[in-house]
Length: 80
Image 1 (cartoon, rainbow, N blue to C red):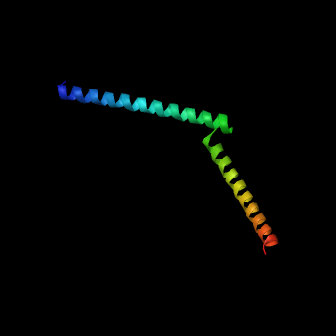
Image 2: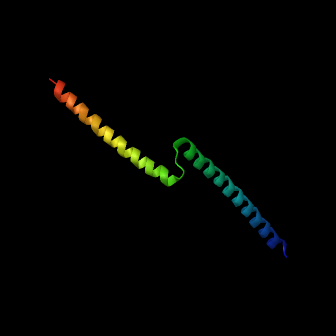
Image 3: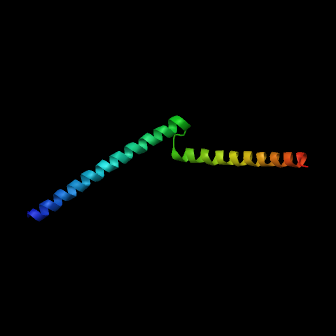
């Protein structure tokens, strides 16, 4: 085997090792975030979290509408 081919093989092995290391770090971060999602928000999966977010957004929107209507009613009643 020539030195050039041996160097290419070593370079590939180094790139593979770095990619595996990055993959492992990313998996660790993902696992940590999933655990945090479960612990802090009682959401075992991202899908459950997304569903919860949509529900909360609807609740917020309904509350905003109630607040706006209440403000309008107040202004109509008390404006001179």
